[in-house]
Length: 443
Ligand code: ZN
Image (cartoon, rainbow, N blue to C red; front, top):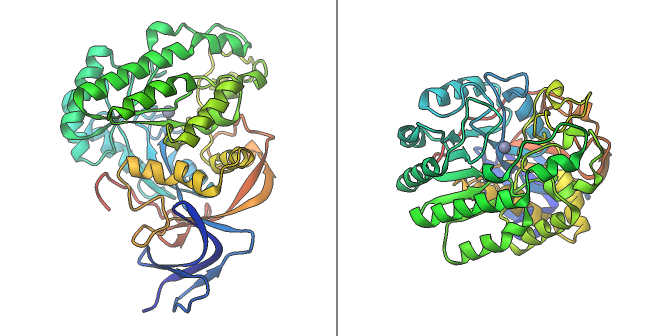
């Protein structure tokens, strides 16, 4: 039996372990995992360098691509090339900031047409739950979206409106009925004030207090409990919400939690005046909060780390005036999430298998992609070769996403992605677009 490809490495991350292994690929899937030096017939063989580690490709379930409609913010070609360069082999695209937003099956098809033939990695889609589209949710679910995103507060774009409490309850009732996952931007508008104009980060931070997240998260938990449905809290920023979340899960409420690289590695005290590249919602909070988010990851209370890659054109960041009140909120980090997290995680005593669990396996599992995000026989041969000791300095102009704005610019990071494979094929930003459009429940 001849394999298409065999990759041999001293360090292969498998489950909670790193082992010397030979990983054999046939027809795009991992067909065998064997001892490092075992004889295997293969059309191609790759032996990783001593310092290199073989990981599963990352699965990023929180990416805003914005094409069509705001392609100048970010498009499928640029986003997925950045993903591939960063070791991310699957993204799930958010339903808003593109026009149309993904709130009907027609809009989903429009998005798929836009993504087709220019996806360098696999691309799935979230649907949107907005006022008035409860009847569309089952149709979108059948059409293959991975679940539904809603906002409990203004989304920032007028064509994607938030759900009020009654609307959220109705949408959760429907997603519970059809078995879909509801993912929620959880901030309560009653506790958020409009961000003051000016270059002062603290003013913006105070406008979106922890209590706003807490109260919205309580609503998510209550609705998940009431309906028996599945819910997911997006971009958790406020660590003080964790005990409540832990209690809810302990009583069997089906709710999961993600946080993002910026909440784990940037802190409010260090954000310079006028540095609107750090603006995102909910906001980056203080250093003590950051420590407690890491505790939440270590304890398993936070399931996953995803990018919330949410770019815009540089002018909308108002970098010239540095006005936190008017600047667009969103951070683009798809390409460097792995080194950003690895740099901090190793300093905090975590291992690469932890990072893989947070950034690949857990997000894949939560959206039902159990054949991705792991190195296992039968899984897709989506792989990433990481040099976990090499260092580099972030140069925003050299990142492959569309607009060269990054709060990580100038940061020294550890961990360089050397190669990325999608179904056993090497992915290069200069090569062909090998990604597929993927659907819930299909392989
Ligand atoms: Zn987002």
